[in-house]
Image (cartoon, rainbow, N blue to C red; front, side, top):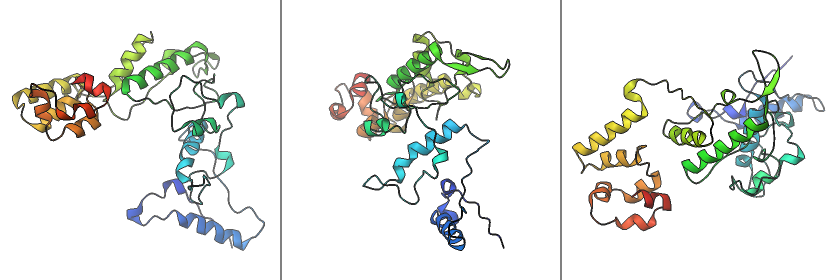
Length: 275
């Protein structure tokens, strides 16, 4: 008789459906016990949904979540098989000094994340993290990275079948929300890189229209904390979530009062400059 079990620990997340990530390991141990010395556990290392470089990056990044206090991987860690991992050349493991600390220097220097100072081409798909304290600073870093790629990276042109120098149209930036694309547009524009924004929105859902509505709603009722918060968090002001929380519930007074709010000194420098 044959026993064939397919499981994915990454997708064992539906607790409300009684999903239990431990069942995958228990099933594997059960099958291994039936045939000691065999190779009953295999990893599916090919995915038509994503590129190998992206899968390897995600596996390496989330490995830290599956580590205990001593840095050892738990049995239900997010790293499953070595073939899921993409090797990173030795000259790509040391992050340049001008790149801000991302997830700690230990994580970057371990070789599990591609350093941002490497010179990869798009064939190898080396990935890295770019993060900073503010959206504007992050946008500047992304613009610098795009500039670097366009100055030397190579791509395989699907239309012609030849390898050529990367062009701006080869680069896409995806956003979790529509709140920050303006800063990235501006940063790329300052770097001399042309951009095209695909919004997929109707007129009244466009960013600038939503911002105008926020202003009009606030002017109609300036004492409303909700409308004040909407205005302060809009792209016209862009106060951070932390600043909004610190000023609540006196958001309206923070705008209308002649004196600066008492919580002003507790805010980050950029938030203080906005107010």
